[in-house]
Image 1: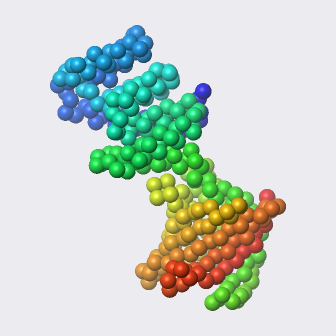
Image 2: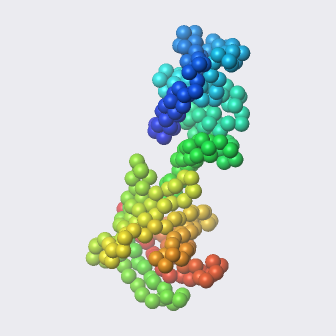
Image 3: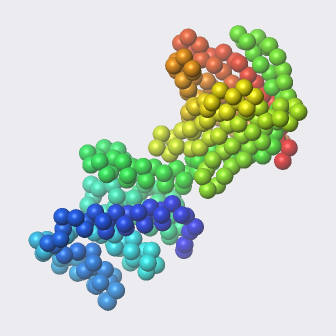
Length: 308
């Protein structure tokens, strides 16, 4: 069964291109094992192609035998010939031939994604990440590591952890100074999610409907955090950057830890406690870290109700 999942197919194309260009260098005196195996597959089927590969292994002086050769034809069979069963045999062989390499596991995960087995794909992506993390090979440390992390995050919907915010909200907010209530205000939030870019945009509006601030958030699968930019439209001071990490804090509760650097160059930290309630309501309380990060001062609290 096919699944609509653009990322692995795109990365598959990139891997295919990388393999072709990378091994065009320094291998002019050797024949391509991948080409020979693929030709055998086209003429006589996958089992004959696997047998051909075994024969070529005894001629390593004549043929280029690498994980990338097998990887390339695995994607070629999966993408061009749309033969998932044959592609699986190539990707399995690659893992067997190169058990210490990350990329064969990443590629096998792509096959499973194409097949529709997302749970199985997660297992192999985690194995790829574990190998790449400890690898001394630059390509595994960077491209393979990042690619596997990105695909795993997408499969686990980590980029959609804040999807529940999408919509229009009425806000009743309370401000605090030194832990004491110092003011109240009302307003609205308009939250939009763009699927193509995984971007969350929040327009903060006052009681008159004027946009007083804009916040944009996008998930970074490598650091497992949201990159955030904020623009104050009422008192423009450029773009303020921060980073938010999320963790579950119990039933219908989330804790967000936001870190940023202020204009004095000092690192600051905020803690957000979100309590999702019934009937499209939630409470959102924000704390600021004190002199030592064990102390937190409440600075803002919002009662939010979704209109749609």
